[in-house]
Amino acid sequence: MVKLHDSYKKLLQIYTFSSNIIGTPYLPARFVPLHQNRHEIRFKTSGAGDRALQERQRQHMARGLPKQKPIAGVKKVIVVASGKGGVGKSTTAVNLALGLTANDQSKSVGLLDADVYGPSIPKLMNLKGNPELTDKNLMKPLVNFGIPCMSMGFLVEEVAPIVWRGLMVMSAIEKLIRQVDWGNLDYLVIDMPPGTGDVQLSITQNIPIAGAVIVSTPQDIALLDARRGAEMFRKVNVPVLGLVQNMSVFHCPKCSHQTHIFGSDGAKELARTLGVEMLGDIPLHLNIRETSDKGQPVVVSSPDSPEAEAYRRVAAAVVRQLAAHSK
Image (cartoon, rainbow, N blue to C red):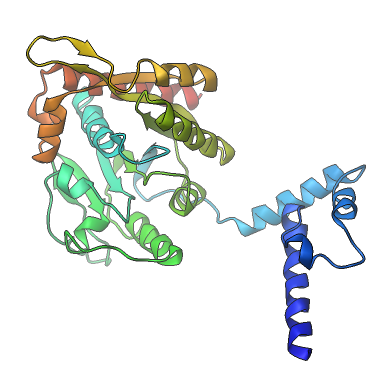
């Protein structure tokens, strides 16, 4: 009975602490004290003192959040995200980074692979090997096509699964950001993992982000998750630069007939709904897939192709939106 009573007291302490922080009951109804009920709890978090309570909650949360600290040498951070996997986010991130340098060769651009569980940048950028260390014990990014890159894929075997819990992932992300000698960069493009989880929150809370690019196909199921991703960035006060509609149309290589395999203009409609920019359309094309699989991204391997031009237009639109949001 004593142990049971102690356990119950601990649960009540957790309940009280969480209620003070978020203003809502943390425990299921069966753990609420007998002298209280849900209506009483709801009454205590509303009414004339509601604004004061919200201010206390904001102060509690502010104390619990880490202070944003810029990455040494990096002027602007652009995150490329999607609500779900399989929409071509990493391919877009790579060609966006290359497109930024192709449009303005005076700009230096880096690429960070934040998808710890499924790193794609080593394959897409045709990079292998372990990073060397500087005199200050910082990792040197691996470089190809003039783009310094860092990825968990450089630190583990190519086919080794990364079976880590959240805290280990957060520690790895911190090292990939802070313990890398990025040099001086105008832009650091971060290829985010899909979804709206720990990694996204950790990055947005720890470093100042200039803007987020949301990648989606026109398919309804992908757009639902893309909207969740956009709303998450808004909640953490990261500007949403706009949407990229990937795999927008398939051009038959033999007859040039156009087929909207995943639907048409879904991302454009979502951009209008969210009130954000439509950054561009990327076609579903064999050339993009083949060059990506070879580690020769289409922007550098086929610079005169319509597909490369589509990525360069997206990069130009991103720069315009960055300028607009910095005013």
